[in-house]
View 1 (cartoon, rainbow, N blue to C red):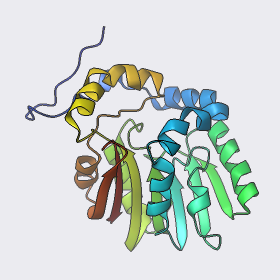
View 2: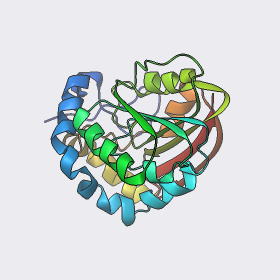
View 3: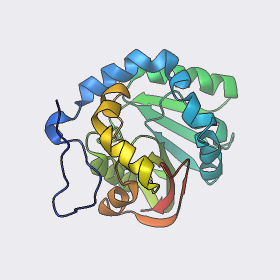
Length: 226
């Protein structure tokens, strides 16, 4: 049985996944390849009952110019991007990317797709006006490095739009998340649902312009800039 790991120096911090227990990049790639075809059914409750789809819409209307969608998955962000934008979308999983490419065709969007590790973005500094990522830092093995890469490729004065899982601010739900950290991680393709997104973002050196919680306090919509 796995043991919850305390965060040193923070007595009231939620438990986290120790490095030795994290899925590797290859394991994550395999996990998302496996669930790609039925992924949108898996997230239906979050999308439409907990308000994630509406949260995406309210956050992503800010996206403009050259857009990079990091860990795009099946392209759930695509409907909320301006149709005139130049969009680049990356994901670790080719099968998720296949689903995203079909969605782009259906929406008549100009989307360039590439299989890529979010922690090692293959773009020059300041390449994009807007960088977006939704429900992804909770799965990156090194979320701070991924966020630093997003910061690097976003131009000065650009926007980084993030919608993330996080520790609820409702005590009974936060306690439930803490008790089920490892079970959820194993069953949900490496999702760490008890993380603190704002702490990760600030540690990565991004400047937070606006943030709000929704969906029983488990989802965080964050507008940041490099």
